[in-house]
Image (cartoon, rainbow, N blue to C red):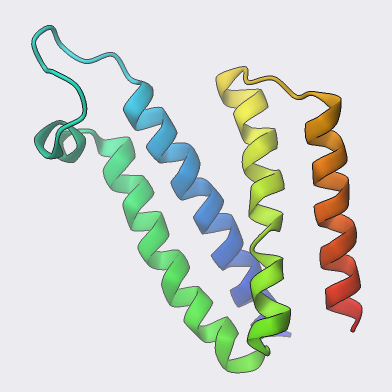
Length: 117
């Protein structure tokens, strides 16, 4: 049962990493700071936290891969797409069109089919 937890935590940390990095690049920058640069990104804690989440996600992913076939585990990562879509709506006021809802439904249905195989 713990291998499911490794897979779920990996997906959650990956989604958290995406949200934190989006937040970091969306923060207002001081005048003259320029566009994206390594020094600006390194000084932004949400970006650093997002990258750390990605690193931890990879560790949990490795544990999950020891227990699941790759062809079963990898499609589960797509559930992170749906989570990020919802978090983008709630945290960044991004739009949620019917097309996005249909896409999320197709992803969910596909993951369910693969998980049951």
